[in-house]
Image (cartoon, rainbow, N blue to C red; front, side, top):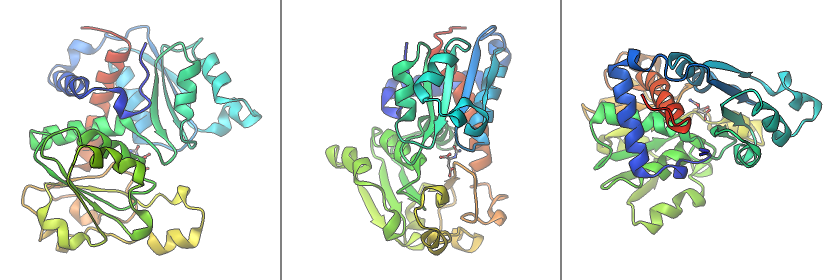
Length: 304
Ligand code: NCD
């Protein structure tokens, strides 16, 4: 039995297999429509979510399986003081696979230690978000046709943005990837995320100025400032509009730039950009369903 608490739980070869399987599902969805008949996915979401929870649930439904769960801690026994360990032991009696989102870093790892079914981390605090990274990698493969030899700009809240941490960890394994980390001084990538970059001599540059690096980028990964992780509302207000991507700024970007965003968007991408063919973020949300279908098949060891 496998759990996915970090993107490092998957080898590069396994990620490539999941991307291949997602593309097969996209090409022939009807082939998979009964693959998970009688299987149940539990979504245990202790934090708000739109795309992650609904794409997990849609993924299981499109595989012919069923879903159960809760979408806020207040409607679960967590509100009565139940531990993650006890909740997970219980849910294992009812479901074949679990996707968990939790505000505390490491909660899905704790869950995995007590689970008798696979546990998938659907976002833990400001730490990791491996299935968003799988989504991002499928999007990059679909848009760019490759994962290597790319200059990837990550912009916004690189400190608390868990999707950024997992994406850097995954992409630094592909050859010829260079990162440009764009953030305010206060929201720089934590040093633990940079360990593999330093270890493997992956090129990265850090700057506070998006406009000066925009022309170099093949991919621009925008993120929102993570209000819920701030200790101080004044700091959030000061930093929230540090970067706003507008059509004027995009004039300096490559014609084949791919703009990604895990969503939700607050202010950081002007809605005027949504019509630009370089805007990939809503396609990205769709790809999230297909890669989660592939991941569920893999973890439940279902072959079609
Ligand atoms: C992200 C998350 O929850 O970390 N959203 C998502 O899962 N698509 C990004 C965010 O909330 O800013």
